[in-house]
Image (tube, rainbow, N blue to C red):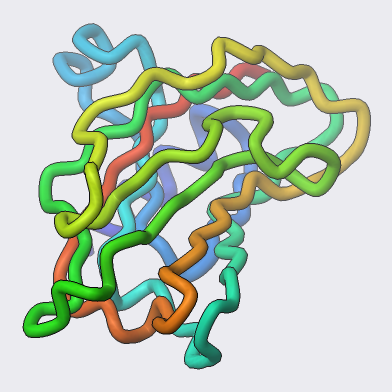
Length: 164
């Protein structure tokens, strides 16, 4: 029920936003004031499903319409990603961008507990007003001998500011 209410609020406040297989929702007033954003996108290890080793996976976070403004305020890593029992799986690097620029909003950032994970990172400060429809995408790249579906722990949050 709460997801439906959040989705209804999101459509009312920001217009229709198509979210994909990740959790997307508006921020409460306190969190919005603290982060400067108005939308949170949350993913965990189950959102990464690519089974081929040494292969990046693109995860579409949400669609944007022409004339919509987007800025990634910050990325927060409450639980670093890992494949428990395999310390050699030591890299899970991400970028956040769109169809024109895969790291427009967040440059390469390590999420893996066996690497040097980054727990908090601000976006690139790019504020973009789209002139045509697109998607905001996350690209995750694993260690060379691993696949991203092997990750069995981890959670990440992105705080975006969307304007219409």
